[in-house]
Length: 252
Image (cartoon, rainbow, N blue to C red; front, side):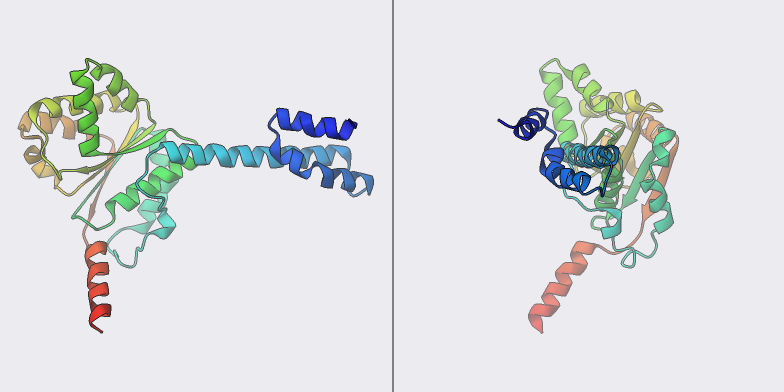
């Protein structure tokens, strides 16, 4: 077996796939005096780093549990002109994470809250920041299950570890007293230590209707609202608009 074949085998064993793919081309460039050995090795290692970064980023996005892969550039700000686009461009810089600040997106169903929250989460995951997206109902279900299995503390620690936690759709279903207390424990553990994005269709003044307990609702709000940006999204529903457009097309 030639040294070149052994080289390919070594690159394969080391899982340096990009170097293995391109090494022949770079040997030719060295032989033709188009590149020095150092420059060739540098470019080969850059290709390897690029692909590893790309794979790591995709892995972060995959494990984050996003409902879809929609980014800020995919959002139709013209459809929701009352939204401050510059504010969300700032959120996408992730500056709020440095201060462990929260973001609350409040608005009716279909105005784009989940899309906006997801786009910020994807921006964080791309920077390889630990991020997790979960519907509020699913979160409550997980906490209840952990409580029944005497693993509540472990489950709360799990959700507390993420630098950015996105809790979507608070308010679509009522939360009982016991579940509200578990939810409070999670929010309290994250308060001023990690950042949380919350989307809700219920005005903050009416959160006692969600948690069915004024005291718990106030305690949860106190911790979420502290060091937070509150965005009230006023506009029409994308889904309703798209459905009406389909009906108009069918009629015509």
